[in-house]
Length: 375
Image (cartoon, rainbow, N blue to C red; front, top):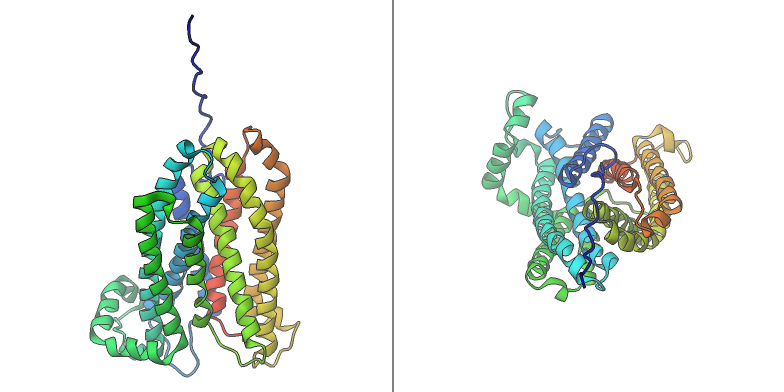
């Protein structure tokens, strides 16, 4: 009696993320590039880096701060999403899921190191905004940009006391130092996870990433509103909800777009989480933004300040991004989840990829928004 062997499934065409690139690695680079470009454009348009009463920082610092802050946000979000991926996949089919998770855990280790480095570099650059005359400047803005790494090292080696003063005297310094410390904890957990697998619970790794987001509102502008604590809680909910949403979708699409049998398991589970996240992100974002405008020392009251101030305009752009993302998410949920569950071909990499591109734009706007006083 002959034994019939099942033939391997014929591989389908390689999906193109957002219809642009077929490489998952290049897609991640594209997302980071979109976020950085958006932050730089918003920084240029609004002039958000200028602090009242202080000399303007050099071009390298003006544009270095949002770039490094984007890298910090992206690395923390990536770390959380890679941890959540284990929960989306589950543990019922380790022969299929473990090869994916081994790669994801190694990626999380690298993103955690990026998290630590970005927080420390951001801390140093923000201290330069307080002591701008101590940062080496060149004869032209172009030369400032070209020699930015050298200038950074000169400042760090020559003025460590100024960085220490910033940490001691400014809440943003303490916040970023705490973020870096939590990042080191994430590095340790990810190293253990690389060696021992899911013996380090995914919930713990995701929780540490969420905890790392909590001090970040301290790095923005303060307010003396009587309900300041409530607004801070709203900002933190906004950050955690956005990180779970963006990180979870990013990890799911990047790692599973070419594995339909695993995508059929993970995407419906992510979709349930995303449903809660979209309401949390939208509600908390509107509340925090309107609270900042309502309590700001400006002559234009609400609702006019929404479209007459840079802060209000950035807020509107971000809300438009959230609305576009939500519409795309509804389309994927209604039009593709059934086909994905049946293992039928879909354009999920295109639509979810485009959703992630819009999310990257929103993150770039958010970086400048947190550094902008309402004016």
